[in-house]
Image 1 (cartoon, rainbow, N blue to C red):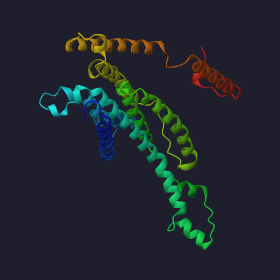
Image 2 (tube, rainbow, N blue to C red; image 1 turned 30 degrees about the vertical axis):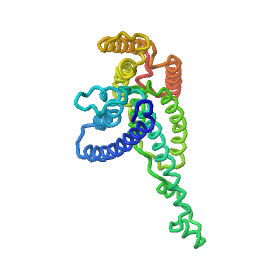
Image 3 (cartoon, rainbow, N blue to C red; image 1 turned 60 degrees about the horizontal axis):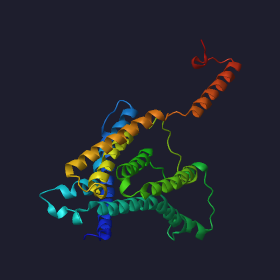
Image 4 (cartoon, rainbow, N blue to C red; image 1 turned 45 degrees about the vertical axis):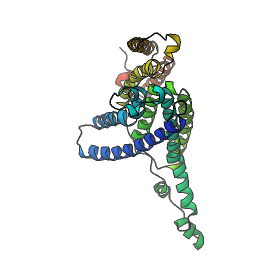
Length: 315
């Protein structure tokens, strides 16, 4: 890469990181499944939380190490000058790499979840060597029971894998979204489409998933909080260290002064985060009122039927 012409090189780096991350991720998930089946946990909740934390620790390095290295380490390794960004400008390289990674990951996700299943269904219906072709040649009409139709459908993906993809995507946007602000808009549009298409798949294209009971999202909440806190540090570092825009306003600042600016900015954002968390209630008043109304209606109906429950008793 040359200074002022980093698009092609950064795109190649993003492609390499994406392929490497997907390959290592598939290998890790296979090893993780083997390991979790070999362990004996007291409860299913403990098993799920352990699997979530292991996956989060792995993805913290597998998914984010490459762009973290470009943003904060490439120019600061004294014994490897060949790794430095052209003209000491790592922000253009980071922007190109991060943009290509986001686009490629969304494209791969779309092809894997929508393109490949659609192609498989088309091939099963039109293959000259499949059962459908033999039935058409023999002019047979097969009537399947609902259970048999369900068995012919594809199996649904585990909910753990859905959460993993969304949380990793959240980490990309929370920690490095300032280098490519349109990443959040792209993810919002794609996720809105996926929300509806997953519902259609759940109702019509996949087998009925097994029932799983959970009070909340478990350890995923801790992972999201950790990524949000890391995002405060990384975004402050991107603005104060990786990018040199601060020199346009204060060209007389030294490197130590820039570190102080980053620290102050990070603490200001942390205070804003804490204030917002305490100002915005996780339980909206309207939802609480609706829930209490439904509980009162339930208790009134049970009282009419002569059924007494502890939560309906009043002092």
